[in-house]
Image (tube, rainbow, N blue to C red; front, side, top):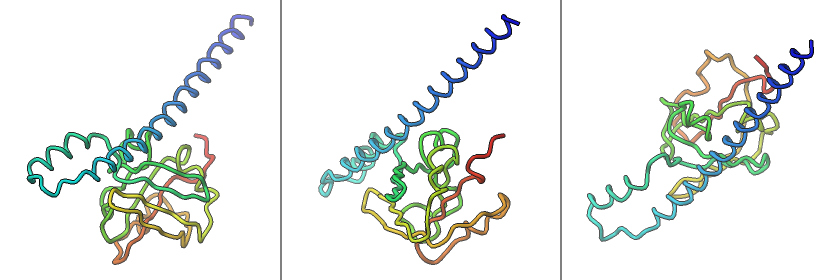
Length: 180
């Protein structure tokens, strides 16, 4: 019995340390993404008007690795999260990701952005219709208003349908506190 208790305490402590380390990395990766976006924004402000196309392409390529395409902000929720292209596990562990097949950031249409419900998008449980959403890009910031919240079946992708106007659809799993 004593050995089982010691084993249980050891396993429990190990799991808590692992969880804490994961959460710490998660927060650091988000902050790094926002900082990287700010750095690339500063690079984009460099006057390249007299540069050759080749030099501009090389300059941008040298500074583009792993940089988010935008930063998503919902001030009423204190949400600030970098948005990367694609929803790979790496991207979703360090921020949000643009869903493939939806409009690209900066293009007209419905931009689908996903993040984990037990991470960056957990705060969406408190979002209200009318809340302001900002998408900061290198060339400016677009402001949107939340017009609806919907819970749909995971197979229902109609919310990601293309539109003729600027729109953003935020996607995460539900319920927010599901364990399993």
